Length: 254
Image 1 (cartoon, rainbow, N blue to C red):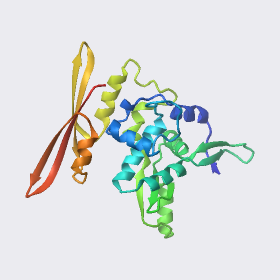
Image 2: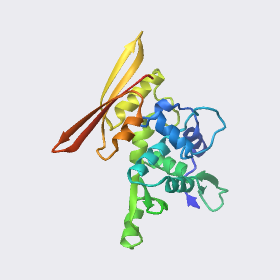
Image 3: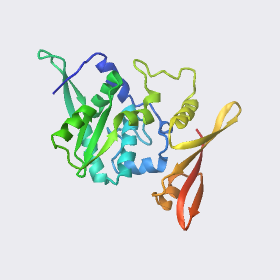
Image 4: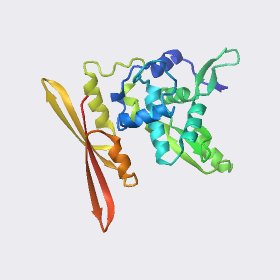
């Protein structure tokens, strides 16, 4: 049970979980890979009865960013599913002893705390997939008491900034009033640290194609890169027989 302010709680939670965003708002992850994750039950956070490609919520988009980071550290699907279930566990929110309290999923609560206080939170994941969401002071306290085991730390504030900050503004999601969805997609790509250049081609006054160039991790297998997108140009640089850089240009239509 956790004590925290419940002001605007209902409004914030509803906005975070509105499934209104199409796949184009997920930057840096191919549709093919998302389809694989969907079949493996990694996404979405909550199952939908909709046929075909569903709409995503802000929490779903953040969770996809978390999956991407966990994959980089080599966590298996089994462990990632365990982490997903832990983040969906319910926390009771109270303001005082006489308060009836409200229930909220752990990941939602962490996001709301960050938006309301701007204080940094971190997800600590041990080798078995057990998680703790802590602030910096709690982490230091555990270190001083020798209570921390070997673990990976994910900066939740940074993940929010990279994945959903541009889409979210309390009390309204309408921060891009006057912009089309395609223009918002361009802004999301520009905001992403993965891309070093973006080329936009217009046709009939509308955005026709978006070409984005990114530097791909040298550790990623070439076969996986080739499967990542239907239309892409890949440039590989070698030095002394070793790959030193992989550059990929992705071409897509909004």
